[in-house]
Image 1: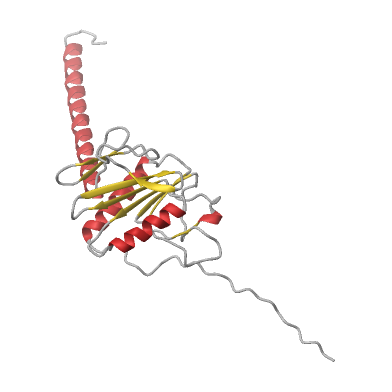
Image 2 (image 1 turned 180 degrees about the vertical axis):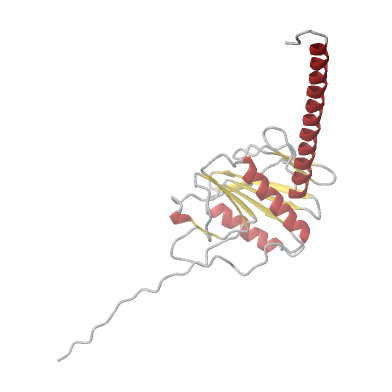
Length: 229
């Protein structure tokens, strides 16, 4: 009798790198996501074990690819920089993102934001910030025990993890680095760099002119038999 061989195969779980959702619903939301993400990248550029990502899928649990979230911006302390397709927490020393930013758009619904809050609360986020650029409304929560509790006074609040300060003016949200410099959009950063470049060129021109004057004066002294040195 021939015994039939059976193969016990376990299907591999795929963790997609995209959820098929748009990164942003409009230019304003996109600009805020990019501004916060890029300024945090700059702030921690010299710190090897801080990972910053924008619109990036986070899978907190191995074995379930349905449990996931794609924060607009997330910051992970204790994980190296580098490219990833998604953030699989079990492959990252089981370190959850500590800081999350969400930028609201007209398409966001209260039920959706409640689900996100509960998700971030359940899976270990320490600080959670939400900004609505259309309404100029900014709120934040910090972890107290097992809960994310609302920050009662957000204006002037300094993030315990990031060290950045939030100022809500009548027109917009302003974010300041620990050194006091404000978060700028990529265009503003470019203009600032160009201004600094122009100032450096002007200073160099002034130095060159002063050297030329000094050289002419030295030559005149030599012609009169005086050693300028």
